[in-house]
Length: 146
Image (cartoon, rainbow, N blue to C red; front, side, top):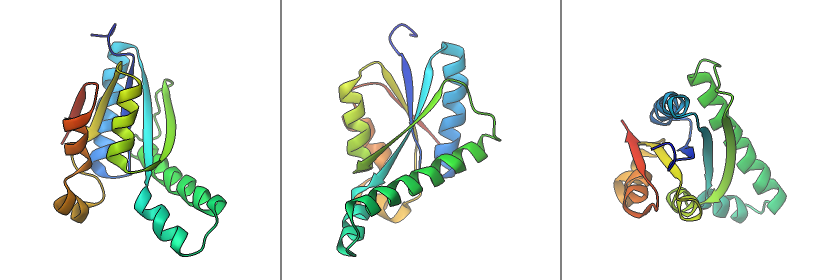
């Protein structure tokens, strides 16, 4: 399997489920001797709301980076400060499910390990959860952690 999977992508939002997914991914990555990429997506809806408030693109980018940093910090805290050497962080802006799916379209050697439910419980009840969309449309393997 390790010759096919070259990286583990873990979408994070600071939720307990995403932290559990990172813990699982860290163990799996160590066993497979591959890297982990924490992936935070600043929701497009937030960008639209901020834009309507009259903020500049630079201010929106700054808000996205601050939000990502909070999610990454909460993830580090959940890991007890023990970060694997092979862990990187990446941020994107858009629809979370679509951005994760796009990542798998660009690289079929990535394994996505995602928490079943993130911070937005109400949205997932109305629109379907991010993990459900990723499972249905990803172009590489997906593992869901509960």
